[in-house]
Length: 400
Image 1 (tube, rainbow, N blue to C red):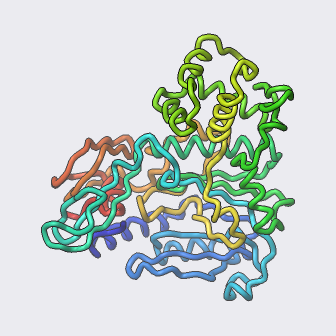
Image 2: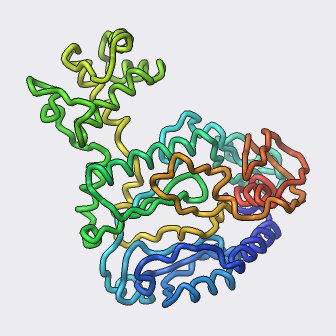
Image 3: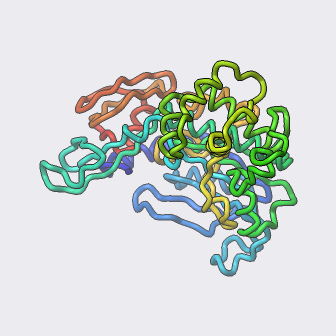
């Protein structure tokens, strides 16, 4: 979904331009002249690609001049970044990951999405096909709530732990996308030349795909994994304890239904009574042990966009740029500070001390820069610029 009116887009671009003319702290990628850049325009919604810059000043000048809707740079390095793709001369690529709440199972289940008629300025359920008033086409508004953002943070946390503890990577950059997820880029020298197949192996590892429960000691006579162990043995042991101790009853019932294993719910309740710092694998029936081990693996795995990580030519959102879906900043985060990052406050880069009237079609609960908006619809409201721009970008409001 994007702007409902051309004047909404022009209004947002004016503030984007102010932001970029202020020479913000935009991330300047390593080996800048070897990167391809691209951006989306506001008016035509066109992608302009095959750009390169020799200096940070050149890049910042373009951002101030064009004030783009979205800005991207390649994860790859090229001999000729301005050339067509087949002539660029690939020199290597960072290992990148995209975590998007839209691709995750969340508590909200995307129940907050809805559709809007741009003619009638009315909101309708997400499954509506046409506007019942005018018969016109409806545009989907994909809302982002606290559960969405927390689910994405959880996946980022798991991914970082595997990349650092298991794979030993040290040059890791983390960013909030400015919308509903996180981006991670690894630039350790040894991974730059990996091909798609080799990157797929890393994806499989962080997902725990193809793990042998026999080799992990969960089948047969092998020693069962302990929480203090490194790698996937310890990860599954810790995850199993978390699942049993903290797992919701509905989640356990779902497991029982899906696995068709009798007594699973009763066994989990029994485990909750005496479980401590270790998981009593040996006390479980083999069928229950396997179901809980698989559930623990799924719970501990990091869920990322496979296509993004495999792509050795991927364009990634430029950190420090504004996300045209929200007006929020794609914000660099120290990996050690992930839990302290506030996605409702820290990425706010547009004015909170200026206001504008908007025709709000529909909004769920929303918090931006300390301003809280309760669920409402079909109202004229005077809102801070940063809040109004987020709603305009989502297509949930127009200028009044």
